Length: 250
Image 1 (cartoon, one colour):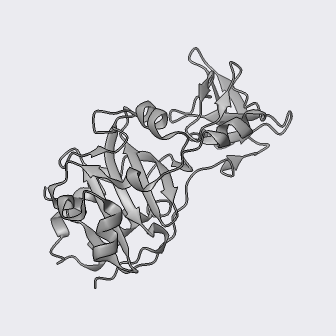
Image 2 (image 1 turned 45 degrees about the horizontal axis):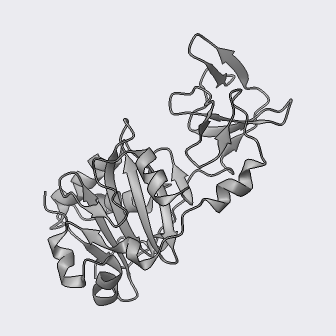
């Protein structure tokens, strides 16, 4: 599949799971089995990929992708929970201090021959081609690249966090509501079925749909790493002005 750089004029909003994404429902009940603890709702569903604050104690817990409470680890949004699954709020300061700060060199891309025309720099590409508009440069295992901090498609989520620090945003699944790049691709498919990029857009929809990811930003520029169910890097996207994505071609 031939990856296409996209430069378009746009609108969209992107949100991600943060500490504000929580549940404090009094009807929820703690359950336990041989594997661990989870929080079950009144209707039998259970919490996953989000924080839960106990209405009795006020303590915070994080429910993982399988619904079980995380223990003795760092949550996807960069907070430490102890052996009892409790988040110690004194860790906030250290977690925030460890947040990544991107620099211009982080937008150097190795392995993309098309970027050679722009000194291998997504920033230079945007200055030359995007102007005041926004731009997307997505990569997958079919178009492998290496970031300036050594992340490739052989890397894991832990490798990304170690290289870049705690992300400014995390998202537990990719949807049109929480990921503007996915929203852009789905809108292109819906609005322009005869688009010359039809096959590429459909490829990106199929690629992104089952993924989760993390977000790092520098002013209007950002890098997003998307992970598969094994927490391996499946997609790396460089974006400019992603919050203003629209679905109209030049």
